[in-house]
Length: 257
Figure 1: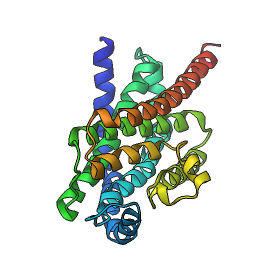
Figure 2 (figure 1 turned 90 degrees about the vertical axis):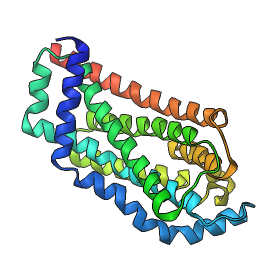
Figure 3 (figure 1 turned 30 degrees about the vertical axis):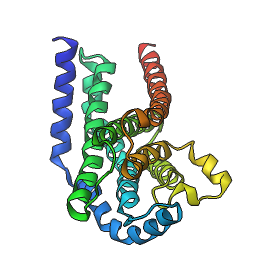
Figure 4 (figure 1 turned 180 degrees about the vertical axis):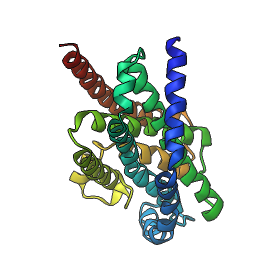
């Protein structure tokens, strides 16, 4: 069996496993819509203070909640790893002829698909229910979401590989997620932060994702306008990917002894 066929088999297996219990993903895709009406008035005031007119607040509330809850869904990636360890499925796959890198790539790709679908679902339902209409290029918006989803998938895989227990991994993912989303602008515009906090916000991938979405939603930005933010998201992804490779290499070294 070629590497591509093995990768496809791992992807199909993990999709089936996710479909066995899609409830967490559905909840994290729908619940942001419940929060949006509560966030809308505050965001409207902040956007008006930034000089925007004819805004309702959904321009920031919908992507803000989408980003926040996408961080929370990282726990589903972590749980899938530890659940398969408990079932004995992951060790059996590692003992097979399928390379560890292929197994990991297949799982990470399914995690990436789930993250992407979740964020796009929130934005799509936000458009349908609340009338969210970006003034810029929708293709640029989708590209930003694709880049951000890759970071979340890599974060979930990295935590699952590096943390010794599921409880620690889940706790850390929630802390990192809430902190990154909070300082990135999911709950209020970064422009409303003190100067020092605005500088700190740039260390969160959520900041760059929301900054790009903000320019597309309110400033009519196109693809070339969001390339700098996508580049920064790429840096975060590379850092997380390196952490994954380091731990995977370390585990291989231990197994070969």
